[in-house]
Length: 348
Image 1: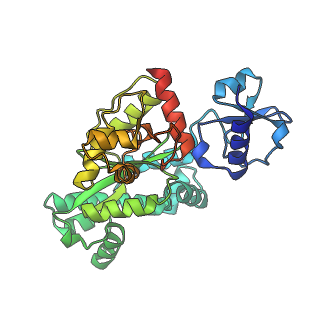
Image 2: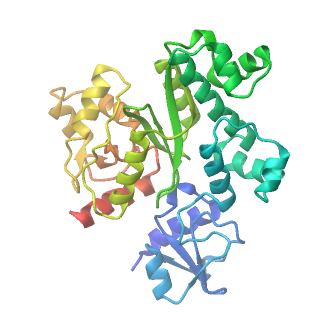
């Protein structure tokens, strides 16, 4: 039974379409007989017409049927069939330059593709495909190919056009990138909402909820500190963390094995390493962490380092709570933090 206070909290999140509550609760609407996710775009019901559930199964058992608008039985913001088709087409031939006839052959409307990609990735499909081509060009240049070879293989007949496009996406002219670093970014669907994963071929650098406040600045700082180009794509560490996250949310995994890269100060790294030692299903206070790293008076600095963690869930900053047992200070939202803590306690 959900307490009245919690119901009011959920209702407020429903009215505000708060993405931080994705996967935390579902709402059944008595007047329509359907149940929805918190961010459903349908007209909002009155509080007295709502029933709240922690899981979709509970809503189904209460005789509510899934909403056809927000699809509560799928991951929030799961890729549409159109996006999946186009992403697969790009991966089959990433060097291809797309024209209108290519969309017609796939029975895809160009404007629909542009709109859906812009909403999901923050770039149009053409920009996405161009970024993939440029990623290949960068790999070729770093591997020893000449700029002209990379230019021609990615379909650019104009030298200046290739350099301009390359610089817009990568942040530097192609001749300056032979020793540069490349990171790839991918969108991962999870029960608590979509996440972005950024990794090299060797390690995972960032894993964050897409709606985290300041995520754009965080990604830009990562790019600047690593002096890397960040382009769409998938690497082995991204494949690995996607599989491990699925197992984690299914309650089948308690320890992540994906290789990680820590980008922070020595103090931050020390804190993050201590966070990783908190046993699955347990919590610690900021003061506990400060004592564990033998700096007992630095609990405020510990809290700041905790908030600077760029590897959500894997480095379990959600397991750090206030000394009085209350929850605060989670970039993904306190509702998600509580869900993660409860999830782990149930699976111990």
